[in-house]
Image 1: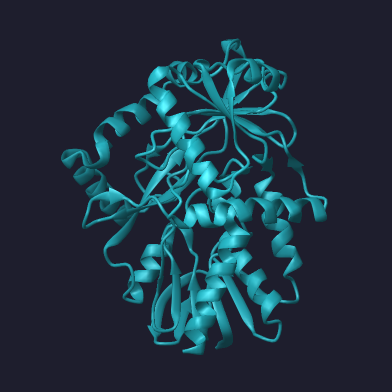
Image 2: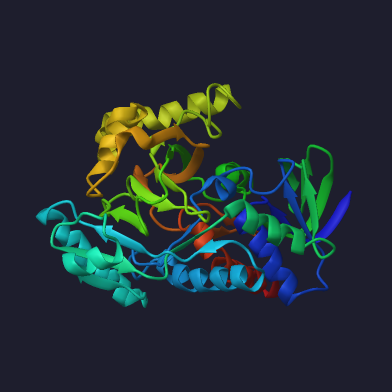
Length: 399
């Protein structure tokens, strides 16, 4: 039997940041973090783009807007202080046609309200900043958008916690035994408060505590393609997104080394860790996910049908490339390379209203806290978001 004050389930950027924040505030508390994989950041935290978002996509009343601006600064400072790789290249958002100008103006409005350093620019100014970007009349320039190596960042946080937090790898949550005890694949763990930051499986764990019953997670596969010419662009280039769904569309991302990748897709996946082929296939998950996706498809909730058709077309290389070319003036289609390591976005679905949940969702139980929807920009927001979580847990413990 392991006994601990705080038990954190999940060793991604959120779980580790919560452990870090707890240790900074309460170094005398015994904190245990369990992670089912052999290392940290094997899933979303290590497979994302590494972009540190500025915070202008999100409505001012959202948790995302609340934590992204501060999170960007905190994580940028952390990388600079610890000599971690960071490319502070900035980003432009471009409009395809006159209809998309409304989106440009709406993003500018949100950015101003959220306190983001964001510039509305014309084509001449865009030419100075990013000569190869193509826009209609106006664009946005975000100087504080940067990119890091997500595995390096998470690895550094994990290493810094050695000797301070009891981190157990290859330790999989199996079930809740009683009010303050859980079983893993190797131990029973007794805790005073549990924090569930289990990513793709956060909803499953929450349900065992009677929390978040109206939610389930739907997996979406994100694929990037490499581009074999680092001189193509100077800055990230993004399209105006459809603000009715949580995906940002195909875009150009510069990596920490200056290489370029294009993507991602948001293809509905068929089980939670459906990365490649039948790897990690789970029949129960397949049937459950298929049921919810079929229901979304036939009811066409939030235009899921057209989203599905559009995203599955991106498996076709030529169509994928076509979606990227309108963002730039010049590009050599022969320099598109292979698809890169896929990622899975764990997107929360409200089963009662049949809609994707756009914001972070955190729900509390008797002696547990559950992070149910830590989707993009969760990586950017991790340090700021973890302060909020620890605040919530401190209030719960004091009660």
